[in-house]
Length: 325
Image 1 (cartoon, helix red, strand yellow):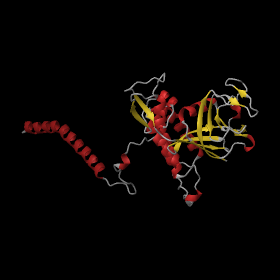
Image 2 (cartoon, rainbow, N blue to C red):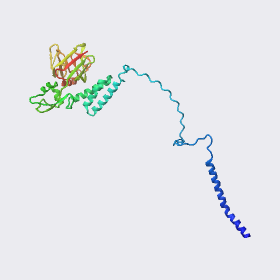
Image 3 (cartoon, rainbow, N blue to C red):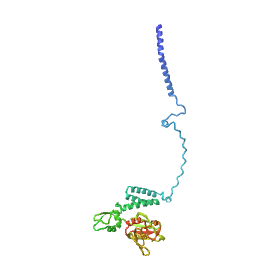
Image 4 (cartoon, helix red, strand yellow):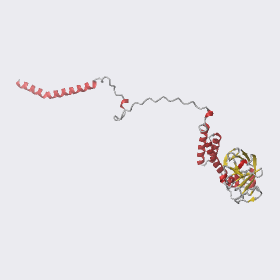
């Protein structure tokens, strides 16, 4: 009996550590359960998904943005007639056409550039845009005209037996000089069957004495503008005339009857002469370029030598010339 009691006591001593460990474990689980189940503190809000966006904790909080001031009412639009030339829709379109024409010229698409520039010139009221369009048209037009490039005013022509450049030029209303230059001919010799590109458009000239300029038109559309000099004291006659003679390296007959040959420093006619159907008057070059843009001649229309040479190449006898105040 004594041994049984001792064995039971020994067994209880061995089980006590186990019971203590179980008690500690139960206590830990109770504490965890209590922390998990406790209610959210009053006044606090749960963290939402939006609140968990990756914003740096160290970033300063931005001050609240003050409300923007109310926009001022837009001014009433100007009536169409009050628009200036620089802001009108037509001027914008003309500037767009100018840019398009410049881009086409850079691509060597000269006829397309010419058409764009002509369309812009028809629209633009802005003098600066018009001047840029006119400059482009003059440069592109001369290149098209004086090279073998095609253009609507040229036709492809086969030389017939017995024909000469002079005969072909007369038939098509052009000049031998332009036929040679545009077809890159070094002489007047042509043969049956030769292929030429022949210009067949109609030229007209208008001289303005106030602006001292000359506008060359092709088929009644702008082609190029030149600066000129006109007669002092309004000596240049006004009216409608035509070219009746063309002379390179002209001789000048002074008003007193003296003859001044080409090349003489006293010869005032420059390198070329285009006579009008009014005795003693015409268009010519000058050795005094400083007089261009002024009313300083004896009554004729004078041009820079390089300009009259170009005009001489283009226009034939019979070209109409209008001189206006």
